[in-house]
Length: 193
Image (cartoon, rainbow, N blue to C red; front, side, top):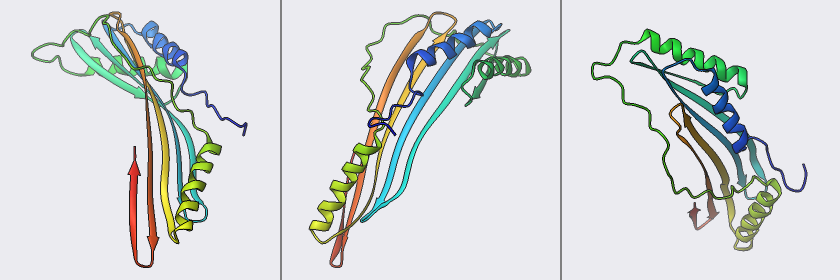
């Protein structure tokens, strides 16, 4: 690994291209696309070594359509233009098989102004995680304790676009550290998010 690992999953341009592909492929009366790209880093550890190291990327592209007064939705976890086009077709097929709601459908929202945080995500860094875990377990050993815990970071990019001009995206970062320390005469626990 390079000194700073930066996966390509959390890419706003990629999310936008996927949403634009869905909108261009749709023949529905109205279409909404929600793209969620997630990168997760997790380290479970005991007092002397890591137990589980995980770095994974997940994606979810959901398409909601209105067709002749009916609504359909389909979702895929496959990040390709072809999969997105298939998902649009599946959402349209679902809508055509459902009954028309007695009170009709709400219109999709149009363009809106948003005040979003837009923070820079905390990129997964296995070396920084190893240093952090080492510092926690060393501090516990210095006090005569055995340690166990979890350190995790999760970045989630969410983008929503629709055929009426809605276009909004944001990134959330969540980090968590949970540490348990054990000695013969007791135990303690601390957690921080």
